[in-house]
Image (cartoon, rainbow, N blue to C red; front, side):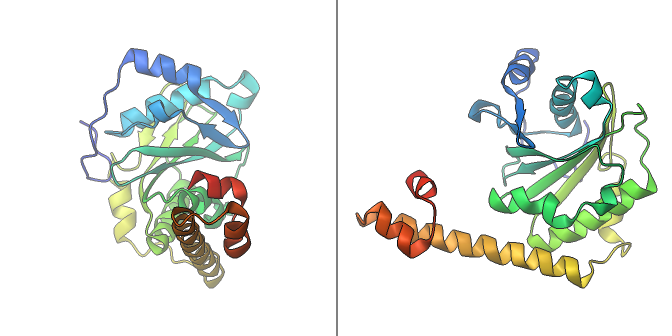
Length: 232
């Protein structure tokens, strides 16, 4: 059985029928891959992730499949998928992707674990030094935000390589290969503080709703959008 970051993740019930349904329900909009509630599944190993991401990649037209994609997958404590986000399309240098771009959705969705995925249009699943350096950078960024980066998959239309399965994740987590610069630390700290402020506003709004206070008053005090208040 393949492993993910040396941990046994919660068992998922997967079947051919499930993935056919997933194929019909997944769609890409505004750089996000959206899943219905029924398909926000728990994942067991890297093979589960590859099956999902292969399905997403093969839904693209031929021109799009010839471009490099970089996705992030956010998980909760139970290893259930919260979101899949397409962070970059067509980029040739992931080193230039800032940690803030990678972790933005994880902070917003309160994910505690993350899996990185990118495709190689060339058909090779060989891991490059640039892939290792980028992954190390994201591991260090995740540590600062309390979001564990579990794995990084390099995929093609037919196969994949998992950093965790071949021990690279453990190696990078123990290395001093990369250290965040002050500018990156500043971005990440601001993201973390903003997430905490947003949580405080939502907690306040939720309590005010329970006390029967009207939406306009809640909005004026908390500065939240009415649509967000109604969801609480």
